Image (cartoon, rainbow, N blue to C red; front, side, top):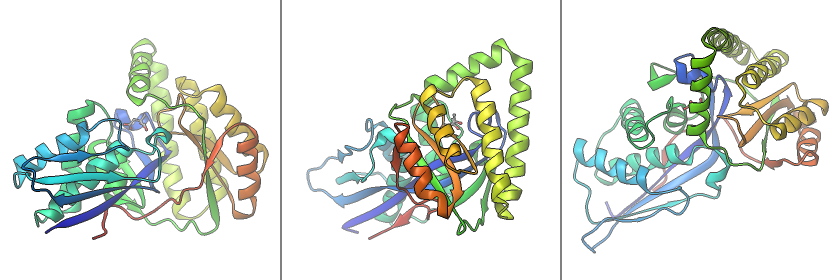
Length: 307
Ligand code: MEV
């Protein structure tokens, strides 16, 4: 094959961040901030990587290594990436690039690879490079849609949610957060306050299971309320910020059914769920509070071969 192009979506955590690191369930959705990997033959006798969207090429290098060990030796190719979204928003560009590159290599070398195998190999790459992470972002990139997810893919259950009645508004706080640092800070809290920590984790796990039921039955008031509860526990864990709090409170005052930070916290994005008729008011309130509203689709398709 001369050229393949494969895209993978980003992610937003709807419920259960941090608790998912400790093997509790979470609910994640794939978002339309897609990252595309293009592989083409290159005669220069080397592998050329052109990936300006990702922080560094370690994920691409590790994906090539894993693919070469498992399937065919990668050589004489150019691998480039494209994405209209900046990596700064915290949509999971490292996981998306890993999944997209592995799927593109499989297509380029005509290698059959199941969705589960793609997830497992990509998760291995992310763990090799990053050393930590639940893999929820890898799952979103590989499977798409909305997933009930437990670390390492122990549970990886697609949820068929009909979101046609509601909107999800995403606000960027203007601050890029460092996930690994925040996950480590949370781990220190676990050491210091093991009992309180355990209570918070169990409470988050309980609300994730409730949210799963309410999402499936489209009980949006409850879906919103559970986002608020989740946010309270994230605040207790110390991962929210003043800026995130002000965006969340602006969204709620303007009619959102619920709102919370999404991801590690310390910056990145918040999400608010609202009736469709309130979308503009909620977005305007987030903007007025100093957030940058990002117009992204959610519950989108997972990795897909484009050419
Ligand atoms: C970060 O986006 C979400 C965390 O739960 C870390 C992870 O799941 O890998 C904090």
